[in-house]
Length: 451
Image (cartoon, rainbow, N blue to C red; front, side, top):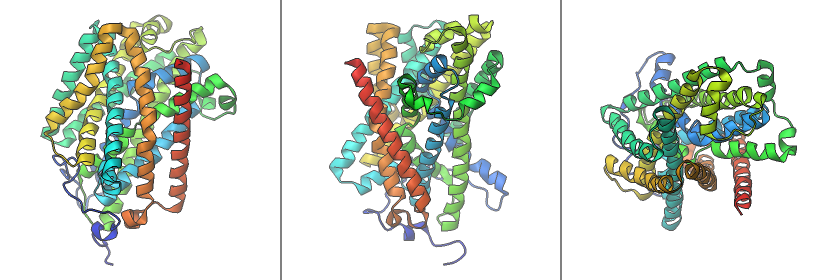
């Protein structure tokens, strides 16, 4: 073996079929990596996909659980958000590892590994999960437009459907443009919450103690329920498909050395981005703890209620405006990546190529139709229930994405020299087991509550 190593195809003989067309073909290998450049320039070249994935961890679907946790229990559940984030870092690292090492995204890998009926069922489940996730983002954006401009929820839902399609046109100018737009929105969310925290002046000592897990979280059933809600809503299944695809937008080489370098820099990008997502989720809980828990408003769990109470409790209308702006940026960001994930999943599982605009239109319609119907019939109350339902659907589907990912990346015949080392296999299966068990428990409890 020479210094750079053999091409990766020689090391991954465990696939039944050769690679066909690349994942996300219009953007495949379009971002160049500067050869011979210093490490920091290469790191910047690989930066981007991690932030597109991270937006799924700060979407409107997470806001309700973070708000409820902070309002009811103060800073206690900060440790749960930290644990959830660490699990997400592990799973996203596996996703990018699969994409870079094999040249296949997770959907393509499933189609190759499983029989056609099983693969078709996995595709249906994934489409349902993406539609459910998209539904939450559409509703979150509509609520933000209503809070900021008084636009009726029904019109807000329709506006959200159109504007995301327009934003995705940026991809035709290059994938970096789309990444840049997403990063700007992520920075907007971060800036809004940084100002909110300065206004709220949370107790630093209690915040730091909240990062340490306590047995009280397990022994107190009400805390455990919210904690599992935070864990269950954190890892989004479509993010695993998305990440394994968009890391292939980088034009790295096909040698072992080039792949190792790509995995290293992509993992750094993903880890830094997910820690930023941790800051956002923690900021929501801290804001709720400092503003609502300490003022006797422990019952706040609704986004609209939180928006109305922030201004009088913090003494400035800016607090409510910043909260709504962050919510709008969060919803827009998540719909962009969710729609992109829909294209990746359909192309990967079914091996069909629809025009990008048509696939995105289909994804938007699947989410918009139920949102429009429920909003028209039930108004704001109905949309809140629809948000809860979307999170339950996501919980049901998650293991169907996590388990195949762990199986593929742990199989030497598929991954070659990039197979998960023993310690990573143990860690990955532990994370998959915890997430699967907690999501199953949350699902059972949710249905029991409804019945």
